[in-house]
Length: 157
Image (cartoon, rainbow, N blue to C red; front, side, top):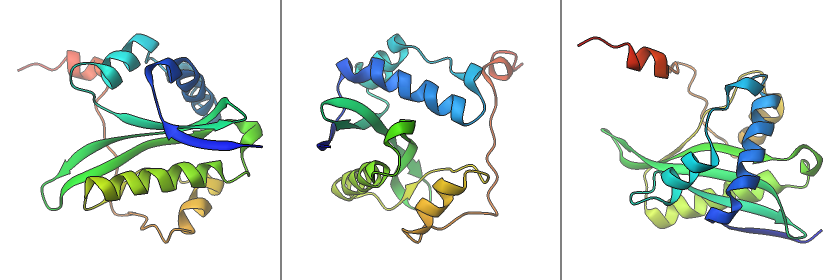
């Protein structure tokens, strides 16, 4: 297998959306994906891109991706948030996730950020073990919070 990690392009987005849907199914939320190709094009390649990504190609076929963006910490300054690393089921265990993760870390280093952050589901043992190999800090005292689109739209001033 010939593996290549490269910067993602607009023409990669259909494959990326397929990977996103595969991840949603794996995380037991297949009906939660609302993002469209049009959203990804606008948000990733519009006037002010909101995210960047790498793709993993095995023998010329996209089998994985890592999507990240810049966030800002009031304490640390510029940081990278790794939204997702996704490797299609049949290509797991070939160190593709490792190659994608390390490419994001290299990008973070080039961007001179002070931190790389991400989330992992506590029941996803393979992912937890993967990040443990990097001596990642698991932030047990921090809780993830969110407002849904409906909550935002129903917000009364």
